Amino acid sequence: MMIKISRALTATLAAAAMSLAAPCAQAAWTLNMTPGISDMSRKIYSLHMLMFWWCVGIAIVVFGFMIFSMVHFRKSKGAVADQHFLHNTRLEIVWTLIPVLILISMAVPAARVLVQTEDPVETELTIRVTGYQWKWGYEYADTGVTILSTLARDSNRARQLDSGVDPNSVPNYLLAVDHPLVVPAGVKVRVLITANDVIHSWWVPALAIKKDAIPGFINEAWFDIDPGVTGTYRGQCAELCGRDHGFMPIVLEVKSKQDFDQWLQQQQQAVKQAAATVPSATTAAR
Image 1 (cartoon, helix red, strand yellow):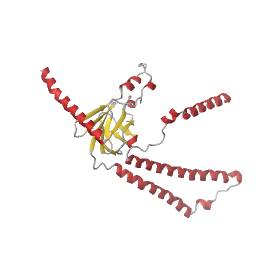
Image 2 (spheres, rainbow, N blue to C red):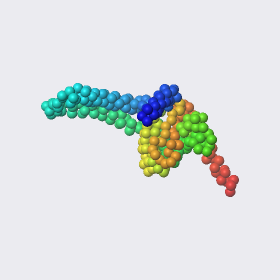
Image 3 (cartoon, rainbow, N blue to C red):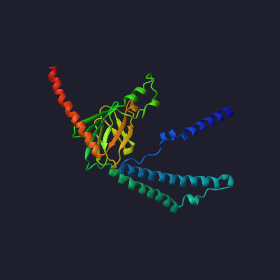
Image 4 (cartoon, one colour):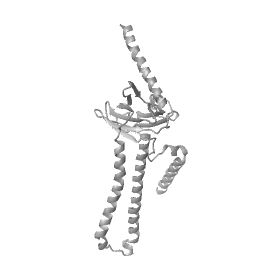
């Protein structure tokens, strides 16, 4: 029985090692935060790494001292507890001050970054983000442009068990939408986040933003993407908002300021044309 269990465990570990060694598996597994595409996201990443290495250093010292003590001062070697060492006032002062200094060295940069994340002054564009079951609504303030972002049709079809579509054949499966959120690079954008029905969470790792969308409340965030950065970046709802929670992705399409202004003008023109056709259609119906 033990031989069978050992063989099964060996086969499982070998399969896991092979899967991790595959390039696609390595690309899919990202365990750490990403530096992001803005100065603020890089500051948050640096703060995260500072805390991480402090934790690693503390773990090495503490566990190293524990292992050293257990090996060299074990009972089988005749070791006897030293009562003088345990109740040494100077040592107690030292190992109390050291954690205090470590916490201060963590708190100062953390407070500085936290204050900066809550400073949306001098923004050039405001976007209202509303979470629905199960989609996102984006309203560009003072422009009349509104976008409803829903899971892409290919992904929505592939997730149906009886569709006969292989999810592996769908690009960006469950991470694509029909209408992405278009934002400019090099412009400070203010984001007002709320929800229409239940609690959602607007999470875009590339921006280092993760804010709850709560009905009746407005949470605020901001981002300023580096000039010259363009492309598509993806996020998801990070709150358990219902049975289709995993099917409301966030897609961010970053354009240059010039391209964004042109896109926004096109959207405004389309809104005006749509508004102009509505009265005509109503009059014809009468």
